Structure formats: structure tokens, C-alpha cells
Length: 410
Ligand SMILES: [Ca+2]
Ligand SMILES: [Ca+2]
Ligand SMILES: [Ca+2]
Ligand SMILES: [Ca+2]
Image (cartoon, rainbow, N blue to C red; front, side, top):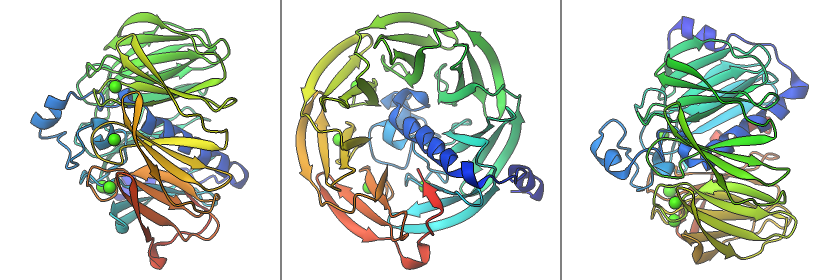
């Protein structure tokens, strides 16, 4: 990184202590949703054959599903197939990247300091080099910047046009060139736009149809054609629909309604590279899966778990079929459901731990199996569960690598 790039990356130092933590949570939400929506990257996007034949995007990671291996979805700044971690200091606004090597930190570097009350980020892979990049957005000024990463270094940094506050960015690959594009949505007006990207260049900026402001978009790939689609949900009426995208062209279809009590999470539970939906009813605790084939839905009911349980998705046995990790925020109990489409093929009975610990998922050792990072926000004594199907091996994070409580990770 040149001194210039460094200073522009770190140009905003206006620190707001009160709001910083809220922003970190927002960033976490962004990254959570990035991790849970298949189509939004060059990822679900990628057909299996392409992954094998394209040396640029052929990941070092042995998992057969690009959802797990794509650097646009799971942070991997050096492209070694091992998930890396982004840390944000809620007091100073400093952002630090840690390249992971299993349960150890390979290398770390600061990206500078940001006003966390204004700045948010998406991870992406804008140039399809298999190394995670950043889209940085200032939701106060509307400023947008791209940082193309090479390990912990910023290989290229470029400002994009401003987009008014009120617009939110999502990432996907709408034209199937495996370079992340930016989908813009204004939740107040329902306006939508698409920027097709090539590295730091906006190839085309296109205004799409305006939607009912009650609709919330999620980027998916329901037909598995390597071009992202948009799932629209009206969380008040429960109505659902989809835009199948081919670049900026769309075909719109209605899907079955699910009343407002149901919340969708996205995965690929049968490993066919078509995004599927885990529906959870937080009131009744009911869970069910929709495996998608275009607009055709196969529904299967799963076990009921009470409202204290929250889910995250990963692939713990490395078979390319998304599994579900459940954590009980009250009791600290944990379990993992290894999935085969709409059925649970195997259930793990994992150890309980302090309910205050926060799990985040990634494959830190590049064996194709998602691992679990446990953040102890109070003591900093984090630990990593290296997963192998229904088994977890626990390793504490080394004392010299522990981070103080003001550091948050997604
Ligand atoms: Ca890595
Ligand atoms: Ca699927
Ligand atoms: Ca699996
Ligand atoms: Ca692993």
C-alpha cells in the first residue's frame, strides 16, 4: 500500500463513541447476510465446472460448493482457502485484518481508522482474483470507495460516484462474469439500481424498476445459472416474489406467501448451487426448508426449537450441502444439523459453553469444513472449534493474540 492509498483509506477520523458499537453491529449484520446469501457473489454464481476449469477462481479450498469457498462471500484476503477475520475497534474505529491459519494468526495489519457512525462495508471480489475486496460506504455523505485487497495490503483503492444516503448496497454477480456487481436499493422510496463492475470500474449503471417500499431484497440464485437473482419479501403481508436476473434484464415471478412470523435464512441445503431457504417462525419455534429449483419449491418441516435458539449456516462435513448451526443464547447449548436437502441426515450434540460467547463461522484451516470462532467479548479469551462433521475440537486463541473487549468481529 502506498502512503497515499493508506492515508485516503484512513482519511476519516471523526470518532463517535456512542454510535460506534451500533455500526459494528450493522456491519456484522451486513456480513451475516453476505455469508447467508448465496447468489450475491461470483459464488453461487459459479457453476461447478467453471470453478474447476477457471484457474483464477479455482479456490484452494476443497469444499465443492462455491458458497463456502468464494472470496466474495467468506473473507479470504490472501486467497489461500482459509477464512480470514475482520476486526473493528468500537472505541477507536480502527479496522484490522487478520489472516488466519487454522487456530493461529498468520499476519495482521490495520486498514486505518473510520468514523463507525458513518462507515459501513460489504465484502466482495470485484476483480475475480479469489481474494476478498471491500466496498466501503459512508452512509452520511454517500461516499463510496473500493479497496481491492492482496493479503493485508490494499492493491488498488478507488473512489466511486456518491450515492445519496438512504440507499443500501448489496453485492451479487448479475451478469455471470464472476466479478462482483453492486445492487442498490432505497428502502424509503423503493428505487433500485444495478452497477455492473470490473475491478474498480463501473461498466454500466442502470436504473431498475421501483418496488413497493414494503419489500426487502435479498440477493440469491434460485435457478443456479450463475447470475444472481433478487428475492423480495414483504415482511408485513408475508408476500414473496423473485426477479430472475440476466444482467439488468429481469423476469418476475410470485412465490408462495409465508406470514410475517416467518424469517428466511439462505443456504444451499442440497448442494445443487441453487439457493434454498430455511424458514424459522420465532413465535412458535417451527422450522422448515424450501429447496428451490427456479420457482419450484420442495418443502420439508424440521424439528421445532424455542425462541432462544438462533441459527447460522456452514458446512461442517464438507459435502457441499449447507448445514445449520444452532446456538441457545440463554443456556449456551449448541447443536449442528447436517443437512441433506429438506432432511437432517445427522445431528451433532456439541458441548455447551458460556451463553455470552458469540459464534462466527468460517473454514480457518482449509479442509473444506466450516469451523466456529467463539468470541468472548468480556475477557478476550476466544477459542476456535475445528469442526469435522458432528465433532468439535477446541483450541484456545493464544494469549498474545487475544483482543481486548472493544474489538468486535463478524
Ligand atoms: Ca486466507
Ligand atoms: Ca439448493
Ligand atoms: Ca454439509
Ligand atoms: Ca475447517
